[in-house]
Length: 192
Image (tube, rainbow, N blue to C red; front, side, top):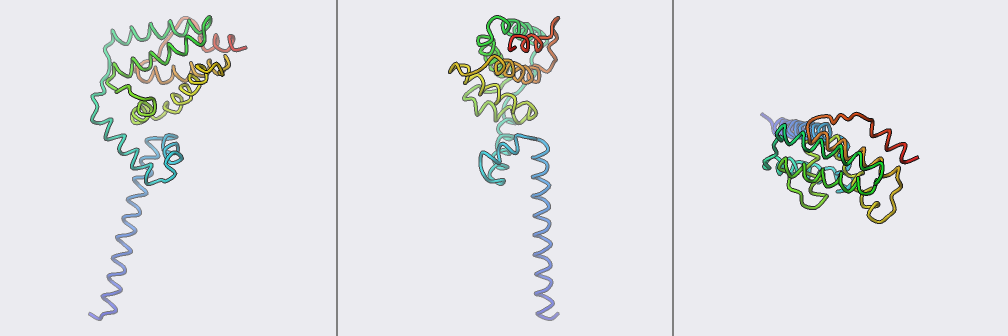
């Protein structure tokens, strides 16, 4: 075989290996984007680099896989649902207090399920692995809660925070919370 033929075969092999590597990376990126949804874009924005963001998302998966995340008992589900209904009812007379109660209940439920409840960003990162569809809501609710603490949140903001907290709470509780009234309508009426 001639030297030119060997060089050509080596170049073709390198191109094929490179194409396979590129396709593998693209498939991996697509899978992460599919799993994490908007959290994928949030990570890319946060880190400013797709590879670094993907590395962080993989580290989150590994971390959460090592946690003992567990469902809660039917009795605990019922107790948490009752407490949530009380927080919702509190919104009508005390929206600011209801938001604090909602945030506390989310933290308690996370802890009961086995999530560590350290700083907010770590909680959001952990939640993003198994509940990527509601982590954006959690971040928005948390931001409104911070504004609430500074006295800068409107009643409409608080209503929206309550709705955001509820979406995460129901996912963590693994059941829909049904009430005799539509509290979202009550939130809107209160915000008007």
